[in-house]
Image 1 (cartoon, one colour):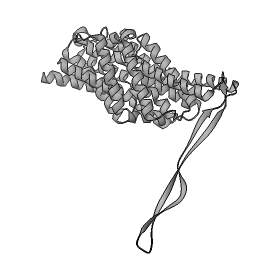
Image 2 (cartoon, one colour):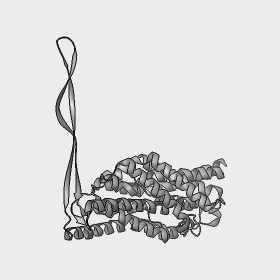
Image 3 (cartoon, one colour):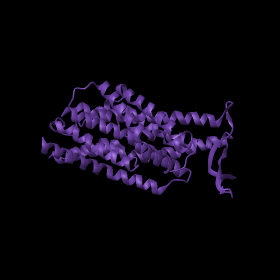
Image 4 (cartoon, one colour):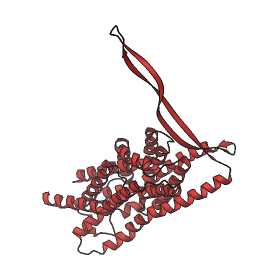
Length: 368
């Protein structure tokens, strides 16, 4: 049974990495600051460092997501409890990843906890604890991120204008030469080159002007990379202990070893399966330039890191999507259709995880 629990937990960590790892660097790829491969490498390394840092800074989250103080101790100590929670949440997150929908692993874990609580408890007062401890931060997170991102971008934009830093538009054009086969009278085929034609054309925004003798564009680029690393680090710090809590419920595993092993599984999930969610977040919520991407990441990283230190289950996904959407509102380029699809996937996350966790629990009890 312990082996099955370990497999379930690492499947959850893998699914989490696949759905979440790219969220911190989505603005890098979306603003064409770097390639997908570079963004993914940066996300993987900084997320892993955040997971390792959880050894020192995120003990409160381990306690919260173990279910102690929320559900009956008798239920938590059942051998099937941790397996059902992990598989219920993992299945939900993995399916969302296959459809390219960025959902919250935190939300899925809360759903799985709720599902098991409903089928195994006769006293439903635990719902109040779950609502107060988990649902309130999860619901407030995206709205707070949107408002803070919108306001911060407006402030930064005002400072930019006062500093005489303007936006320039760079048009990048690639040419290709087409060749046509022409048959001569001697039955020989000859390739004839036609005039060059435009194959791709991209327009990007860049900042002109200097700050302390350094070009504004260079400063923004480095700050953007730093902020993306901050978000990924915060995500590793926030999510790794939540997953580790399940493993530590019924085993005497070393906490430090468990956190590092889970961080490795998350990294693998991101490296192998992150592209669909990454492209959806990077390209489809709104168009971004580097300054806007930096602002969104700054807000996401601040909210997630603060939440981790205080043991609050704020979702990195909700904060990241909310911050990017706030920028979309500010620049009047928000894609409402894509945002609506993402919000719809959030609404079904909790009930789906509850159903999957309950089914696993029933199946394990039936065949044990």
